[in-house]
Image 1: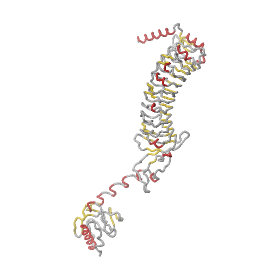
Image 2: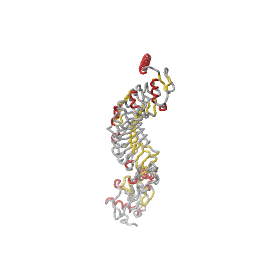
Image 3: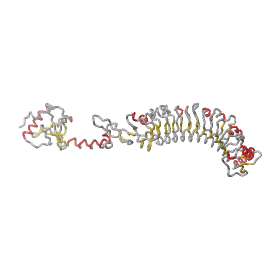
Image 4: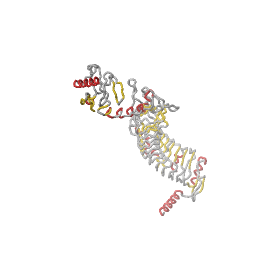
Length: 526
């Protein structure tokens, strides 16, 4: 016979104690084994059954008792409502805890009829290891793995136990190799417009001390700020051919040491005016073969060498200290910028320029290429300040007038006037006599004079409208080897003289004028 006092030690509420003890006494003494809902209290063994299986629970995990509903035949029938209104029992008496088997509440299965773990798959529905690659989270925080591989950053180690996110927190890229030109080469970097939190190099920034950085087998639709935020000692950065469309607002915020930046062969359409405001050491900028419609180079005063060729610019802003500027194959129709005493090489071929007045701001030019533009006139007034100009290319324009006789350029050695509409150039003899290379082919020139003291080594004269008498006089002063071209087929009334097609006439210019009028009349009649 058990004593009632020893087995009724739990007191949750005074009103519940009497019913509980009476039920236990009646059950144990009467040896009745029939229960309507199969709930058995083992006060000494502390056994709980969940879902039909028995588990031993420690003291620290009490479960709620059921709430009596009504007595019947010496037993208490328990309803479907848990005791305490669903709250777990928390009242203790003499360090003992009452446990109950919550398998069945009024015919309803344990856990409210839901499968184990609330109906969720194991691990809350997440893949094993939190969705991270196998063995990834077993490294201490910040430990580098195989160089060059894309890894995922897990959270720090708290209390010796690694914690993970359900998805990768950051993409990490590290230098995989070095070569003679670059001490840091990134491979297989792929960043699109939606990529966020990409990380480059090591978290310890002192380890990212490489100065020459490039990319291979990579695409980078948007240049992220994280690259130069990690590599703050870069002097040469090659971003060519990465399909860059956009530059992050702060991409160059830490680019104080960059001296050469290459971003050619990308898809850039616009570079904002404040993009390079922190690049105080930037001297060489390569932006060719993009789709740029706006970039103000004059806002980067440190530039020495610039290439913006093959873009869609309409205005070229020349920096104050630039020495060499390539801006060909764009659509430039205007050039602006402050007075510059440093600019020596300017290449603007294949544009839409119609005048050369802006050249007066650059008196130290040595080479100017204006070929394939829309120029109709060249005048010495735009070149009179130039005391160092050696090479001037104005081929493939629409020149009908050449005025370099008023004040010849003393240092000029090469002058290319080919493929224009020049007719009368004799007055430019003082300038021509000083040259070493003169290209006059593919014009409408009738007469040409050179002195016996000229310095020409190379002269082209083919495809013009020569007067034969003028040619004979010319070749008395010009050695034939100096002429490096010739005609093959002549028009009617023309014949070859010294390898060039010419026409006999007493008044060559009047003859050409009458011929032009006749041709115009024929065209009008058609």
